[in-house]
Image: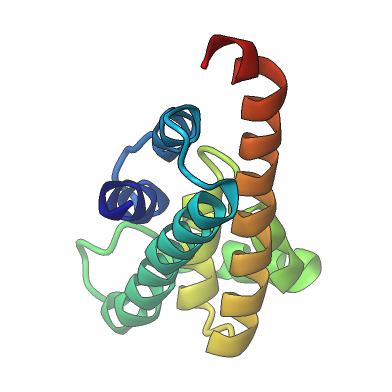
Length: 142
């Protein structure tokens, strides 16, 4: 279970990971689905909150030459975020776009409680879907 937690946490940061495979493997090994769901959801949510924290901290460096986003790019991201809003964090589970959304939420100073709520909801739904798919497709193979 600790490995699942750590893999889920790492895969929610900007590091690559494959928490879905760990989850399915442990489910096939007979681990309780509800416990797997809770551990993976918690780890992945905390990993995304690391991204939010990094985004909040990174804002202090926006005037440095090495900062990866120009002022113009940051202003464009802010306009997009104001239009789409914090609800975009419901897509924080998605590959490729999920991690940048959580970093952007931090850069734009979304209140912690809203970030936690939206990210936790998205991650919990994701792992519920993974477990449902494992049950539907992998059950005969386990």
